[in-house]
Image (cartoon, rainbow, N blue to C red; front, side, top):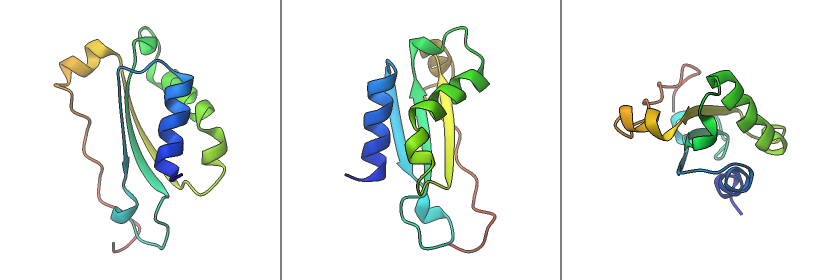
Length: 102
């Protein structure tokens, strides 16, 4: 099972999600790791009334084992269904890698 599939499974098992998109962005970064940089966009009614920092902490808890492994970077974009609608169902683009060529 790929790291991306493991992340998807852990998040779906740990939180009620209306929408989940995980993008492997490892190709955008220098170095040999192929499953080390991920962008996660998650929409859940469970995020209602929860500050962004607490949402991210919850996601980190769910992915703790994977974060101790080979994941170098995890960009989290967490929204309630209403926030996601106001954003026109679009998460921000990831910046280019600052660590060298890719």
